[in-house]
Length: 373
Image 1 (cartoon, rainbow, N blue to C red):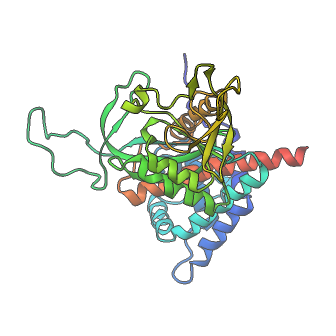
Image 2 (cartoon, helix red, strand yellow; image 1 turned 180 degrees about the vertical axis):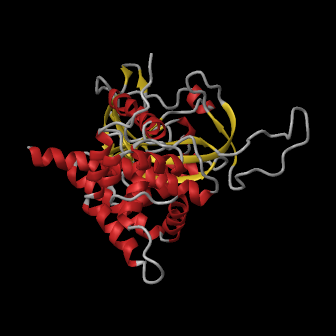
């Protein structure tokens, strides 16, 4: 089987469409206003085009991106007809880190625009974390059975644990971690944070919902794996009027079956709805012969508003895999990994630019379809 090394033709049209988005033009205008002194340098539109092209073509480094720009006439014309130097590109990324508020504003605007274009975006969400191995020698020792390594090329990275995927074994890894909230209906990211590998996923839930609220997204349900199964997480979601759908850890209470519906001599009681004012679920005797014929059970980890094991719970929880597919597309199709930058600020910028490209591409497609219709 042969593998093509030629850049796809649709990439040029995609980069052009992204640069023409009002949200991206606003970012370019904001960055252009910061040029108040010194030599003009390369146009800001060209530099932003380079940043977007890197993710569109899933290239790992700026050097390869600029090399493609020099060889691809149509792509070079799309970003302004010039090829910036390596040094200019690295200086521009430093400028992006200095003016992160402009990038944050662009990301907020793109997420709001995606929400306006697709009302289903963000109604049902899934949260999870994904490993990003550091661009560094991650061996714990200097050599086999040797002394413990004290210095790493990426001083901000740390040790963490990742699950087995495909043929890759699970276990410890050295690097960073992407925590994300993803829409289960569109499989597009809504909010995300980049932390080191040792940071627990549960600690990022509140921050992700704060970012989503700032961007005008208010989920109705949130699906999480058993790594988030803790009463504080349920309390946090319920306080935000979000229905939690979380897999249970096999604690002693779960093993005793305390999460199951009530039973009596007439059989298993049926679910009769949830009342957010009471903060409780209602259960009824199947024959209505018991006195009382119904009971209220307060919300908690074992008795959430959407009871564990019901058809609705199972249907919603199946959407949790959407966050895994989103991670896969970001890593394999948009060039999120392998990392070729070091330091938390550079890894965070790389993540933001990658996701900006992904969301902007989805927004451009949605607007093109609406115009065609």
